[in-house]
Each structure stands twice: as structure tokens, then as C-alpha cells.
Image (tube, rainbow, N blue to C red; front, side, top):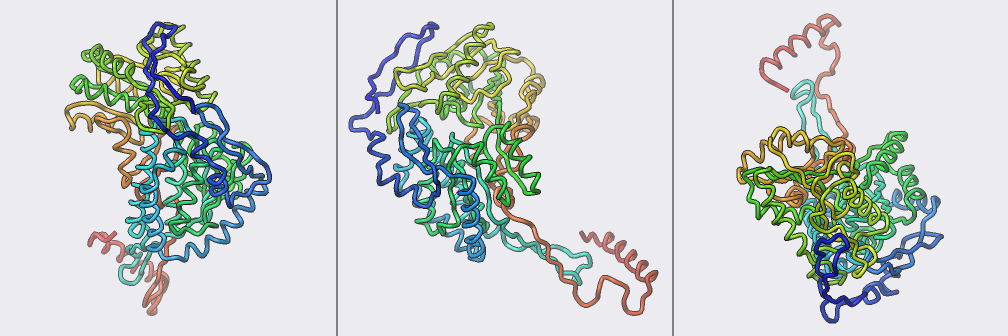
Length: 542
């Protein structure tokens, strides 16, 4: 790890640059965290005839050599998972749920281990890494407590009340194929797998290779909590090689990533007639209404736009501000943004970390440079910071953005937000909705009722009032997912667990058959059933 000194170099664009958070004395380094013993522990059970490696965005140095799976390795992982799934599904729901509750305690108690791994693999600030610990713990607690209610048999009214007894059962799908992204390697890997496990499924997961250690740490902890090891298989390798193999063998596919790849996953699953859930891209909007608390909105915008360096599917990239408060808001937001501390140490204190890879840095740099070249104003940031690390880029605010600038409509997935002024509420709702995406949005107002009215008109899967994304995402009893090109299906709540099950209806007919009986001929039976339907309607039976 580089030993950083606080500094504020001058930007070529003339915009004040962000300070560096000084590393505390004695802070851990990559070599302290990712030891040969740790690598051996985490990669046990991962089958791969090849070798690959992952790296830390903080410095670009290699973290670990890892097994690389072939298509044959993936097929073998599914065979092992399928063999183990039957016994796991036969385990009572309460016992399966108890694994999640033990896992909850282990994650909280040993969070320092995974915080180090998340930071090293993603480059994010420690506070943003802690969001993942919170999200996984909340999901484990929720499904650990509620799985029994979600999965218990349900009685329904039969076609002939009292004579037809109907029960709805929930059967596990079998082996879930999960393809997890790099940006939230704990939450979007094991966080999505928890409801699949408690529903009685096995999981074969392909985490991104660059963030595989975090997912493997979570697997290790789940096994310690009581999950049978064979029920949770991990395969590693290049997405174009391993990803299609996951889709080829799975009984259901869970994917989080880009819209382009999500379409390919959906097509592959559809060809096999297996279900799929997809959380995809976003171009999320934040609306600051004229009655908003400007200071709170400016502080909230920093969280909404720059958490995890903007590499969050539900972060804000479009900021619509009412013209009557726009100047005040922009001044406050810019001041807070310029004061954000950047850092690369394994400690709390930095407000933002690094981008994760060269591709993200290239996209961010290109979007900002093109916008400025075509007339946008750089309000803050717009500067790469190689003095901190090879992939650092300052939190950036652009004003005067308009089509056809790429940053106007394309997802940047980095620490860049564009400011737009508006005067009419109907107009801004139409503008917020004028995107192929529909993942998350944010509304700021002092009038809660008005905020709910605006929220109901926004075409996004989640809407947060007076916050950017955390309230909706963290409320795990409620569904979270995207509309339009932002995906299919939902995580969290009943939908987040029932998608991993097949509904089965068991109907028992008692006393008399649903056919002519007691000497009735066909015509008399038809007349009797018709009268019965009228009577059931009159008595308001469902």
C-alpha cells in the first residue's frame, strides 16, 4: 500500500481538487490481509484446472492466484450441487433458517475481515464497504426470521367449497445459477444467495474474478454457520466462458450486471424454459423540488451520487433542481463535493475510494471530456488522481449537459452527476421518466404527501423520499428491482424468495366427484353446477 500524504494538487482544468485522507499509522496492507494461508482457506473446494488472478484497484498489484474453471468444471460443480440439494431441501425450513441467523452473527462479529477484502478488491472507501455488511446482515436476519412464513403451505378455497380442499406448496427449483458483479461483491453475491438457500436450493455462483475473495469469504462463513459445503459451489473464470455454462445447467438464473449482458442471459434461459431474475443498469434521477431543504438535499446528493465512487446501479447520475433553489443548491453541493477526502487505506476516514478498473476510468474520462468539449461546465472534479492510485478520479459535477452528450443518456457508472434545472413539476417528471432505464429515483421535499404523489408517477422500481437509495434498498421486506431496461424480477421481500421456488397446487376432492353422480345425467349435472355457480356468486364466495 502507498503511504499517502495529504495534498491538494492543482487541476489542469482550474477546478479545486479533493484532499487526500491521510492513512493512519500502522494501517494494514494487502500483504497483511491476503496471506497464502487465507488464499488456501478461501479457495478450498473451488475446482479449476487453470489459473487466474485478481488485483487491487488501489495500486494495481496482484492480490491472489486463483483456480480458473473450465466448462467441464462448471458441469461438475452443478452435478455436485444437484446431488447435495435433495437432502438440503428435505431439511426443515427452521433448520435452514437457523443457518442464516448464525451467519448474521458471524458477519457482524468478523466484519473487519471482509471490510479489508472488499476494499482491496473494489477500491471503495471503508464506510461504503460497510454498507455491504449491513445489507447482508439485514437480509440474513429477515429471511432467517420470515422464511417459514413465506414458504409455509397456504390453504385456498376450492372449486366446490368444503368438498374441494386446496393447498399451495412451494417447492425449491433445484440448483440456482448465480452470476454476480464486481461492484458489491458481498451483497450482490451471498446477499442474493441467502433466500435461495433457505428456500431449499443449492447454488452455483460465478463471482467476478477480480472480487472473488470476498464471495469466497462469505461461502466460508456460511459453511461455518452450518450450510453443507456441497450446496454452495463457486466457479471462477472469464464471463464469456463461464457465464453461458451457468445458464446452460441452472434450474433458475440470477444475474446482476449490464443490460446488454442481461439480455444475453435472458435469451439463454428462455431457450431452456428456465426462469431468470435480472437487475441491470440505471440512469437514476434525483428531483429537488422547490420546497426542499437545500442543505439536506446537498448533503444527500453527495451520498446518492458518490457512494462507492458512483459504481452502484442505484446511484444518482441525473440531478434535477427547481430553478428557484438551483443556484443555492449547486453552491452547497459543489462545496461539499470539493471537500470530499479521497483515500486508499484500509481504515475509515476517506469519503470516496477508487474506480475498479481501466474500463470504468476510460468511460468516466470520456464522458466528462466530451461533455466539456461540447459546452458543459465543470463545477467540480473532472480530474484523474494518479497521485493516489492508478484508477482514482475525483467526484465530478457537470452543468449545462444536453443531448447528444454521452453523459446525458448513457450510464456512466462512476462519480459523475449532471445538473439540470426545471420550473414545472409535470415537466421534470416527464424528463426523469424519459430514459430506457427504470431502477431507482429520489425526491426531495418538505411535504411528505407531495413527495409520495411525485414518487407514484416515477417509472422506477424504487423511489426514495429525502434520501438517495438506502431507505428503499435497506427495507428488505419490500421488493427491490427495475422497470423497463433495468431488469426483470425483484430481490427482497416475498418476491425475493418465492422466485427461487415453484408453486405447486395440491387439490383433494372429497365425498363426491366433479362429474355427474347420484343418478344425474349430463344435462342435469350441467344445470346443477350452473345453479351452484350462481349461488356462490350470491354468497360472495371466491
